[in-house]
Image 1 (cartoon, one colour):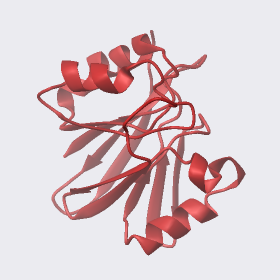
Image 2 (cartoon, rainbow, N blue to C red; image 1 turned 90 degrees about the vertical axis):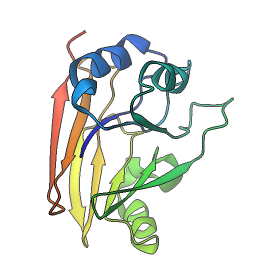
Image 3 (cartoon, rainbow, N blue to C red; image 1 turned 45 degrees about the vertical axis):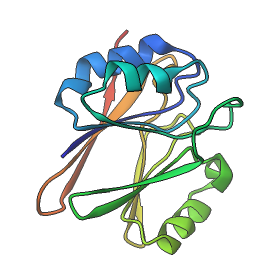
Image 4 (cartoon, rainbow, N blue to C red; image 1 turned 60 degrees about the vertical axis):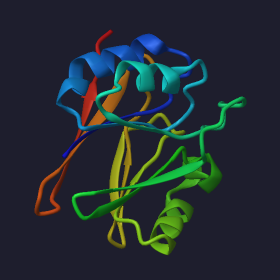
Length: 159
């Protein structure tokens, strides 16, 4: 199962489109971890209708019906998707990891820091795709095989 993960587009629809154009055709699921303030979630749902699309609310998403947290199950892995601001991820991943352990989650996709991250703590793997709208935009591809092995690649989006 292949997942395209992006975050923090901050209205830069071009970054989202480029990520989808480059990596979306191979993805089964497309995830946006929040701060898509100008309709990125709607664009993804419309233009990637053949994929499962999961989007959450970020701290800059003021008027939205998106949830703060979503959960999906993929190839025996339980994944929590959140923006991260509610867990103070700019100051460390302890609170996020604690929530993930509480929810019996294997993987967490989060954003907010704009820093590509792939860390494991107490059996919880926490993946931040970085920002798809900054000076060097980036996203992540995550592949989970039938044995539950997880391969994460952070890839630059050249716009």
